[in-house]
Length: 239
Ligand code: DC
Image (cartoon, rainbow, N blue to C red; front, side, top):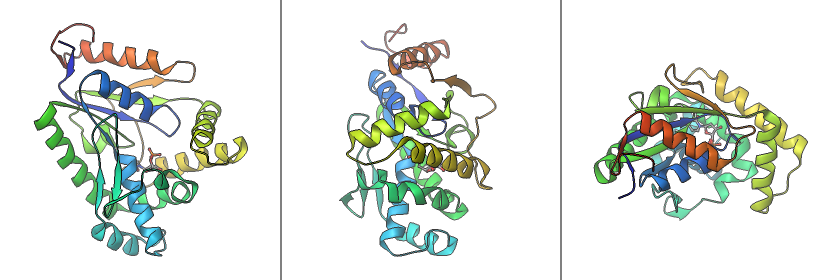
């Protein structure tokens, strides 16, 4: 029997640090669920844009957020994102949403709403499969402060921009290194300086620099950490 995750792994850090790839692979390897909280902020942003709301207007964005039906899948192999029943997985990762999402994620009432939904999803997945890897910016600090393992991934801005560029190119989106680097920097600044739940490592988070480390090695190190924390069931040893 393979080792299985018991409890929550919180995976925070800025964009381009490998969070999504690492979180999905870790969840898959440990038979756990997976939650991409960024996809929820992105779906609300798309809803605001579709409604023609000014994303800088907190009240308008809050009204849209309360009315929107956002559903994100928790299967690490198929993390779908639905907005009012439409599959918006590709659209929410395009430039238009990416440029606007930090403003929406800074609205306290939107955060309150989504944090509540995220906690409900986490409770449901824990009851169903026993373990979940949750990625975002405030998972270890706000959404799941009791998580058994908290990881904060980092990487140099250059490497993060290069990874974003590769993702854009794989998805058929046109971009260039300078623009992506500026956009990565801007989003970090907005996400880490906002008043409501700013991005920061929890006091008990393990910081992991992925600049020169491949995904497989990061995942292997996290599995070791999980084992040391005693949050793996099953074989009880190396997953
Ligand atoms: O991880 P991502 O790039 O898909 O996140 C999109 C945006 O949402 C990002 O600018 C920060 C914000 N976000 C947040 O504020 N809190 C989270 N838990 C997840 C994402």
